[in-house]
Amino acid sequence: MNTYQDIFNKMLYKTVESADCRLSKAELESCINSSASDFINETIPELADTIVLSLNKESKNHLKLIRDYADGFVDRNIERWKSGFDALEIFIITCSEIGEDFNNTNRDRAARENNVKFDTLVRLHARACHISSEILWLLKGGFADGAHARWRALHEVVVTALFLSTHENELSIRYRQHEVVESYKGMTQYNHYEPRLNIVKFSEEELMECKLAYEELLSKYGQEFKTSYGWAANVLNNKKPNFFNIEEAVELDHFRPYYKWASQNIHANAHGINSKLGLAEAKEDVLLVGASNSGMTDPAQLTALSLSQISVGLLNIYSNIDTLITQHVIEKLKEDIGDLFFKSE
Image (cartoon, rainbow, N blue to C red; front, side, top):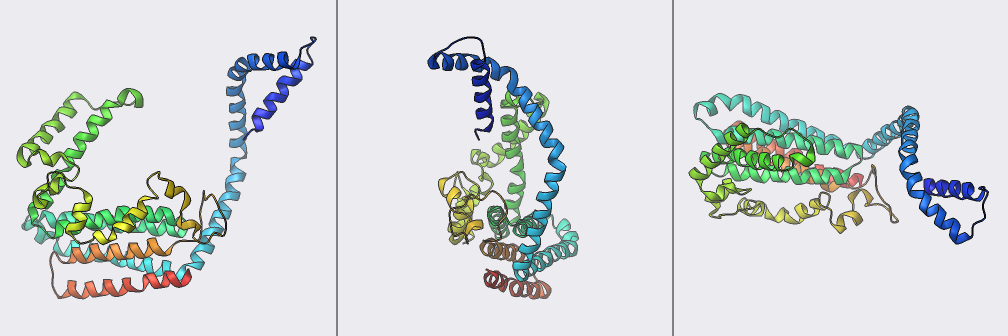
């Protein structure tokens, strides 16, 4: 990274040495150092503009080479993991279609019953299917660590959905109304940093309208409602619940090690820079900055498991012979996915 610095130093030395004066080495270095600041301030912006123009001029050809290589990699990656990718894709499509059919079949009934839990779980299930599709896309593209990080989000959605499914409609109402709390916090934070972000802040009227709704909810549910998981405070009998408490309540806390593992691909801890799924087959120390065809099994298997959990949980809202059979279909489709990826690995 000293390319420009070396050129710069040579130019200065050449210029000073060619001048009609005699300087000692110390004087020469002093002259260079004293001249450097002004020279840098005057020329570096111009040099940077020239470099950017050159990069933009060559970008079309460069991008073509990179994209051709990336397309070839994706083809080879899909070929290696084809059986697993196909099974996972079929599973995601099936779960999506099951959710759509369940929603269409029961939407009118839920509306008549004012079943907020139904609407909430349908939306959470749709989000889970969407995240699962993102994970599949990342896996096909060779980003196992990114897929693993997205599974963390999927797990949070699943745990929340299952927790809501085991309680009365009232909890789902609180969960949906908690959006006001998050909105008010976001608006006040947004306005706080408005000068540094150089953005148009929320007006006093907008902020006051949200604040009134926020205070009304705190008056109704108590001060604990303003915490991140305050919507669950009453059923957990905990004034400041967290995600782990909800995880425990639905008996999915045994996934905590996997959750923490996936968090390494989100947080900037030291382990996250040294241990990566994409380097699972590396024979030497490598700095991974792009795609890799390694490490697909764990995020794929976890995704299939989590998507099956929320899909079965959704069907239990209105259970009949159709939903019971469908639950068995989900389980049978899920059970082979991990083995197929393991065989490819």
